[in-house]
Structures are given as C-alpha cells and as structure tokens.
Picture 1 (cartoon, one colour):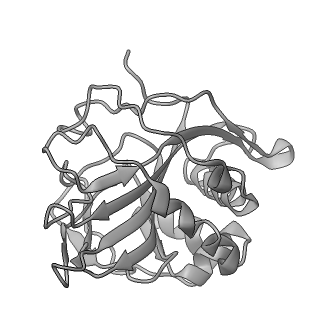
Picture 2 (picture 1 turned 90 degrees about the vertical axis):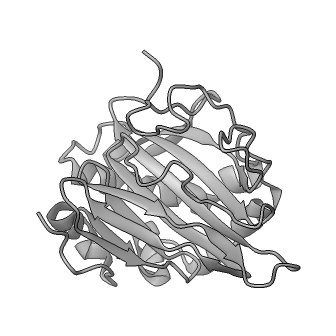
Length: 253
C-alpha cells in the first residue's frame, strides 16, 4: 500500500481519521496546541528544560552528540482521566526494533520538576494518549503506557544523529515526534516509510511545536543527521519524542 500524499492538517478534529486512514499525520504548531487545548505560549514555558539535559551515556556509536531525559507515565482518559508518574525505570527496547541499542536497560535521568509538574505538560500527554486510544479503538478507561524522551542532538562531533539506529519502528501503538527548536543547523530531514513497502515521504520539521504522529504498526521513521551551518558556532536540534502503548511498558521478559 502506497503512502497517501497528504501530510499536514490544520484541523485538530481530523487527526484520528487521518491516522486511521494513512498511518501518520503532521500538525503545525497551532494544531498541536488545539489538540492539547493549551495556548502555544504555555508550551513555550517548557522550552528551557532542554538546556539542562544530561549527556546520553549509552550511545553505542561512540558519539557525544546526544543529551536526554526519560520518564514513564500511565494515563487514563474518560471520566476518571488522569496522569500518573510511575517509579523511575529503565528504557528498554527489543533488538527487533532497535538493532543498535536494543536488548539492554538504559537508565536516563528523570525529567526536572519544572517540566514534569507543568500543567501544559500534563495536558499534552493526556490529550495525545486519548488519540492513541482512539487509534486502537480502545475504551476511554483503558490505561495507556507513555514514555517521554526530551532530546537535544548537537554538533559537538561535527555531526549529530537523531536516529543512529536508522529507520525503525518502536514497538508501540503511537509515536509522536515534536520539534521544540532548531538552532544553527542544516539537515534533520524526517523520513516516513510504509512498513510494508518502499513508498515514503521526506520533509523537514522547521517550526517549534510542529509535530508528527505515527501509527507505529504501519510506518517506520528516521531523521537524517544534522550539521552546523557555522562550524565555530555549532548548533542543535531539540525534540520531544512520546510513545504510547497498550498493555504495559516494554521490558525484558
């Protein structure tokens, strides 16, 4: 099945149908804000947290270009809607989904309170969890297991790799990639491919709080490396990756 040509939508109400029909949809900033039911200025209040991300010590390619944190949540929607932070845990993926870093427990520092306790943060996760439930046709009361990964990819090594594992799936129901900032870089093109064929799309997220929603069962994705526009000044790309999964978190058997 070829990927349909439609990519962006400015209609928040159309997001569930587009995800079901084509397996992905990209949202401009105003549409993400509408989905989250928060003004963009509220999301902007989260940006400073990306300046305090510790280095990723688990990179198996030997690089020093990635900084990140990680937290896990359980979200319930419907009448008893709520978001619960679970006890801090390792991030784990099977080798089938991450050939480079799969099969190991990777421990990252938790999110700082300034971000984790912000109302806009909690509302964003709950709103997107509801989209994941709709995508899978789940009851509004079904718990959704969410992992949150704020990333900064910089050009310390001359080149930064947003997805060193290459084109991949994550083994979840819904993946959301949100651009938070681009500074002094070129590259960082997003690529989305049909998981069952060679068809795909290429585009670049350029506006802060633009977002890509992916049905992880139907598409694979990657982002190309970044390079500095000015080598002396350097640069970085900040993103927020959120994954939503039914039935529990991924973990070693």
